[in-house]
Amino acid sequence: MATHQHKPTRSHTSRASTAAPSLPGGADAGLRGLRYAEQRERLRPSAGTEARPMAQFEVLGERFDSLQQIHDHLMAVQPTGPEVVVRLTDGSANRPTAQTTWSYYQPGQKIVLDGVGRKVDGMRGGRPTLGYFLSYRPVIGAGHGADRPAAANLEVRNLTIRGFQSGGIEISPQTGAGTDHHWDGGNTAFLTGAHIHGVRFKDLGSKRSAAHQANWGKLQFGAGGIMARGLTGSTIEDNAFVGLENGLVRGAANDGKAGPQLMHGIYLNNQSGGNTIRNNRFDTISGDVVRVSNGSHGNQIVGNRSDNAGKQAFVSDWFNNRDPNNPQVASQGTVIEDNAIGTRYGSKRRAKRFHRKESKGVRPDLAV
Image 1 (tube, rainbow, N blue to C red):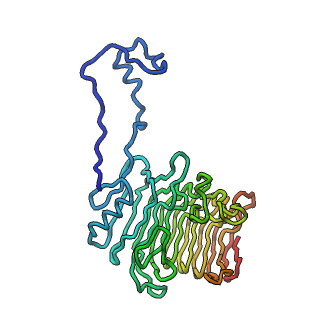
Image 2: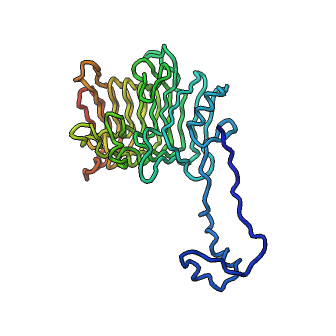
Image 3: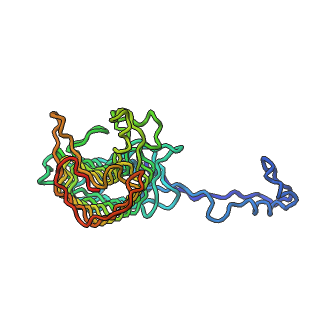
């Protein structure tokens, strides 16, 4: 349901008074003897410190308190047109209380999420909100395999995303509507042409989660600032990834001690190939900065820089070749070029630069 924003009103006294108001806790020590009007003026908040209303999401001339409400509204009205732009309004950070799961999709209609330089913040009492800020799982129908991907119809720009346990943005297309932990991306559903730029991903992962909320079996841990499955021909550029860290994760390897290594800046999974990762900054990433996995061939990782990032590697190719029920394959042809690679996570190793390296698809193939 749409909500309407009202301008804040100031309270006024009905008549002037010279009596001093009583202030709690002895706070009026320096005000006694002053006229009431002078006391009010001294207690007035300084310019710029007045409470600001929480930013809202605006689309098609209406405002909503959450991105999930925007999604549900679009599902209901099914607007026409080649593009739907969702913007954040002026105000303090928007504060989501849950992951947005987005299945709305029209083949010829692009969704643009424009933060206009503003912030969404899922941190509550120092704890992150479970899930991703945006789990983009459009229902694209059948017939969109790797040889015929559907248009991603997604652009995210000019936004700060903070305080979510799993990460910032997940892209996992579906052939049909599924449950929260169901996706077909990289199996029978593929997308192409997403664009994520000018986004700041900050303070994501399970490092700040309560101990009982970091669990491998329940998928409660950080995976990536951006996690993609079945995504091809897309561009991730001019973003910042800062403070993406996991703590220990119950049920993960080595009694949960492998938890920090599960969190990546960007994770291209399940045949997410032919994408470009360009001119991004990575700072304080507890796992590999970029991970490609399970047949994600031919990605370009060019002109990025990192510091205190990548416990094991700047770029890694990982696949599970030990499970006969879920066979995976290596990712080949990943080009790593002109990246300024700084210290590893938690290390003082000096920065270096690779002019060019191309992965050979042999596990482990770590480019550091």
